[in-house]
Length: 372
Image (cartoon, rainbow, N blue to C red; front, side, top):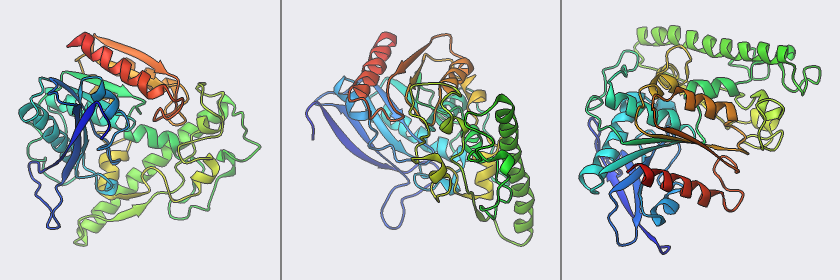
């Protein structure tokens, strides 16, 4: 163990869940604390799907004197089955542990990457219950008994799950069940279209992305009725070609310090044709719950309007998937009268430059100490 911090493994159940027969708990994480100390303030970070137990910022924060709970809900690695109300209950289990077991007085929500809208939804539900159950389901037990946090941080965060997926969707897809079919007039890699892309092309492309999201939503609604009528509760379906945001290809759009023609999956054209990406497998209910622009409660702005505690928004200048306008959108949506914005020169996870993570940790801890 590195000097300066210690960590503890946690495995917990939450309301409505139980320990799996194989032995694992639905909620798992690692709690980082300064070596030999019991901090009174701590961050908690959770994502829709990604394992945050060993979050890259955890040791940096703990070495600077705050606690850090890298926390996973039951949906870690199980994105195709995600339901927001159940995830919020699991986050609440982590917050409650910090308060009741770790002795923390001040809990700060860290919404990193996709977790930005998720943690905003947690605070929103904790202060003003508003989350609806999934289609045809009952509201998760315990979701109306969440402990509000004292602060909120958006770190290289997306405005919302439906928003980021729609912005990344390939608008040229013609048939959801045949990924080879393409509309050349909307093809990012048709040289007749660019790059650079004209404002007219971008406007048509964005409208086609929204229309694609809506087509899938309409199909999910009717398909759920069909399979339910046949006695099935749900079904899984694939989603292809989700690395096609024009900003990934054309750096003149939403300019920043990012390298051109790059996304989290590498070169966008190649990534777009792969089987890796956002939302590659979904149940019908999960699409409606998480990804649909029309029906999802995972859009950040309505929840961020209810976040009135002190807030900090940190952007990454060389991020290839979250752009300056995303950070500005989050900042504007937050309901807090005490909010601060900061930009760090670095990629999405601040792996480069070498000093980026130290800078992020300094900003976070200094901000927290100035408030509590």
